[in-house]
Structures are given as C-alpha cells and as structure tokens.
Length: 612
Image (cartoon, rainbow, N blue to C red; front, side, top):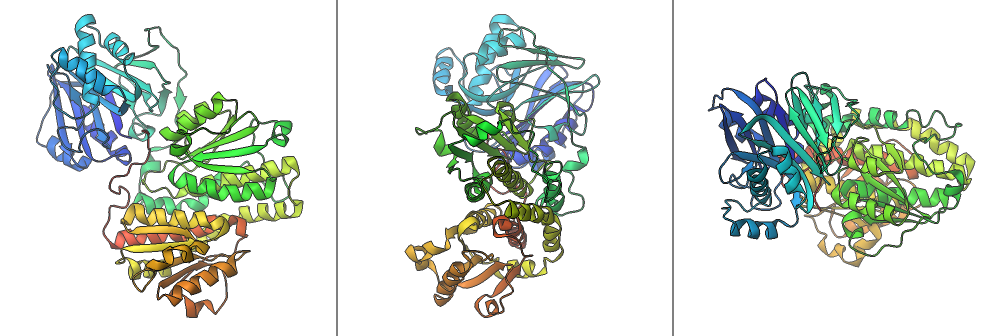
C-alpha cells in the first residue's frame, strides 16, 4: 500500500523524487523518505507524517553530484509510523539502501538468521530484513542485480523493491511479486514507480513488470531479466493519460473535482457500448460465447470496500434481468474459506486500482478451479486486468482522492451494461423494459449534472449535521448498498460513526439508539419498497430521530416528516443507486469540509490496498 519511486539520470534527483512522491501520497502518508547517491555516498533522509515534513527537511540540504535516488511514502504495516521505521532502509554499512511496498511474510525467520550472522537491526520493519539479506548476497557476488535476484528467491509474500548501492552509483534494480511496479523510460534517464502518476509529468513510455521479473536501470539503458538473469524482451506501452489528469483544476480537493467529473465518466463508460435504446449492448471485452452464457449456473462477484457495494447493487440487477443466482463475496473472507466455484461459475472481480491484494488472491483461486474470470477495473494496466479472461475497463480516469466516487458510478454503469448484455443474450428479460432501461442509462449524465448544479440544500444539510458524532443511513432493496456506501463515505472522510442498515432491521435492535442526537438518512427512491422505507422513517421519527430524506418523490407529505429533503431527478428504481450516490458523496464531502478534515487523505487510509 506504500508508494515507491526511483530515478537514475542527470536531472535534479531530489526534486524528481519529491514531486513523484507527491503524486503517490494517496498510497500512504504515515512517513516519507528518500535516499540519494551524492558525491559517492548514500545519504538517507526521513520524516514522520506527511510528505510536507520531508520537504521541510530537504530544504536544509544542498546535494551535489546526485546521480540516482529512491523515494518512499509509507502506509505502516510492520512497526509504528515513525521516523525510525520510515523507508528507505539500509544495511549495517550504509552502502545499500532500498524501498519496499508489500509484506515479507517470512521476515521473522530471516531476521533471526541474519541476527545470528551479525546483522544489527534498528527498526521493527520487515523491510530492513530485505536490506540486510541483499547486502549479504552483495558481499558474495559484488553485483547488485545478482544480489537482488538471489535475495528475492528467499522472500515469501508480496513485494515491490527498488534498490541502490553506493559502489554502483548509476544503477537501480527493481523487482516485484504480487505488488505493482512499473519501469518508465526517458531520454538519458529512467524511472521505477508504484504507479503512473509519479512519472507521467516526465514520460508516458512505460514497461509493466510481471511477477519475478527484475529491472536493471542506468541513465541510458533498461535491462529486464527473469530470476536467473536471462534477458526478457518486454513491450513498451504508452500511457493514455495527460499530466492534467492529476491536477485539481481549480477545485479545493480532488474529491470534489472527481464528484463533478461523474457526468463525463458515465458518458465515457457508455461510449461504444450503448448507442441508443434500440441497439444491443456491445461488450467485445467479454470473451464468453453465447452458449457459455446460456450455460452459466452461477455468478460470484468478489470485491472490497466501495467496490463491494457496487457488487451488492449489481446482484439485484443481474438476478432480475438474467435469472442467474449471484453471490457477492468480500474478498478478504472469500480467500480463507472453501468456496463452491467451478467451470460453470462466472467470477467477477471488481477493483478501482486493479491492485487489491485480497481480490487478486481470490480471482486466482477461482481461475485455478476453471472459472471464467471477468475483471471490472479503472486500471486496464493493472495486475488484475492481466489475470482476466475478460475485462471491462470503466474509463473513469485517474482517481486521486482516497475516497472513491467517480469510480463507484463507473463500476455501476459497467455492471448494468453487463447485466443487460447477458439478458439480451439469454432473452431472459422483457425487451420493452430493456429498451426503457437503455434510454434511462443514456439520460443519467444530464441528471447527475442537475444534482451538481443545485448543491445548496446539501450544503445546508451538511452544516446542520456536521457536529453530530453518529449517523444512521437506511434503505431497502437495491438501495441498501447505496446506504452502506453513503455511510462509508461519511466515515472515511469525516470520522463520524456512520452505519447503514436495511430499513426493516431498525426495529430488530438499532432502534434502541434513536433519539434527538441521532440523524437518520432514508434513501427513499420510488419503487416497490418506497412505502416500506417511508414507514420505517416514521418509526424513527416517533423516537425523536432527526430525519433526512434522499428522494425523487414529489409527495408533499414528506415536508412534515423530514427536516431536510435532498431532491434528485426521477429515475428507474434499478438505476437509482447512480443518482442517489451523488448527493451522499456531496453530503459526506461538505460535512468533512465543515469539520476541517483532510478530505483527500483521511487518516489511516490509502487508495490501493496492496496487502492482505
């Protein structure tokens, strides 16, 4: 979950490292550090907390003859988030430095062995073990690439490594296993990075490393090898994004910018796949034949966090449209139990980043027993995308804010299109209703624009309830997961204890919490469960709860029941989560903003969860 960058070339190394880390700060911000090869010596600089603290440290130094450097932004796993445990880590002699993203599972055994051989440990991290191990191998072979390859054969777990040595000043070595690492190619300079934003300002030419591959970088060369040192010829690819994609464009926070990008994100997700209400859905990326689709007995959708909520919404639509039973699984639970999966089960993995470690493990388990794996991701260059039999990219663009917004709705659009695609192939759903849903899908962008153009009531509501320490969201049916997602957004960025419940479950325990100090937000979208949710809201009102409605209903009677009514345009109930999610995102954003929270970088969280 950490972010790493490496650079070798003749430009201002420290500036490049700091700017690159700034683009990776969504991956962690417990501490930051860098190491440079300056005037023939490895020099390491660290700071606890956010990157700005490291920048202040570096302002006191003028470094000369810097030829290469590595940098790290940390999300702590092993050891407290302090300066001592911050990366880079070095060996005892200080000649070797490295940065690491991931978890080395056998570090305790290696640490005991290395301690017995005279290594002195200064930190609590698993990463320092790797530094000592590579240094030990270097002492035997006097070659950094060989030493990294030899050490990597002894590591278990997940890692992306970037390593440098004082005696080889124009050289960086990188490798990865179950953690992302890319090589970026420049003119007389080259880079290693966890993700594209770190380097897109300098180059769009990249090589994606696969597991157990090693990159050896000098200013004018890149060599990719396997674990035995045999050269591998990798295809160079061009990044599809521009540097402006990671610019706030005048918005105060990336989250607000990304919320406002959603109309265009929905248009992009529909582009090329749905032309009009009378044309079939086109999903060329889905590699199942018509017979395979008709023979499907079951679908499993595996995801975490916000993506899990998208999956829960998809379950309602897919089952209704296709008559195929759908199980939604939390990735972190799926991988530790026996699952009933086979060749007649389609397994769908959903992840914004395509790097979510638990989901990667889950889909690999499913592939091993013969399931067809479909991946829905915002990153078609990701690990999960490369594992897929079928792939639906959601085309949301780079999402910088830790709290997912635009990627959630992009995932929903992809899942709706998939459900309709299967229904059309199987002829399992009313053709007239399918045409109606297609028409409504195409109308979603202007409806979201209407919400974004009339935010005043949402802001007033946020200001009223920003001081409350607890919050309940209720809904039924397809919008139960919308309530969960709304509560998650509020928890993530405001630290308010928000919980989503099926509205009918209030009376089975949670109703005991209701009084004048407990706001209750009801997702009250017209449809088959509208009257039931309204009745549950009345029960909450009878217990003096402060009520908020999110609805498209024009029922004037709601004015007497709810303190605030957040209005949205009318939409078919199946598609209502897309419309309903936008005010919930804005409500969470404005509450966090009123409270002065760090919206884009909430405490303890990181954008890409690359460890189990």
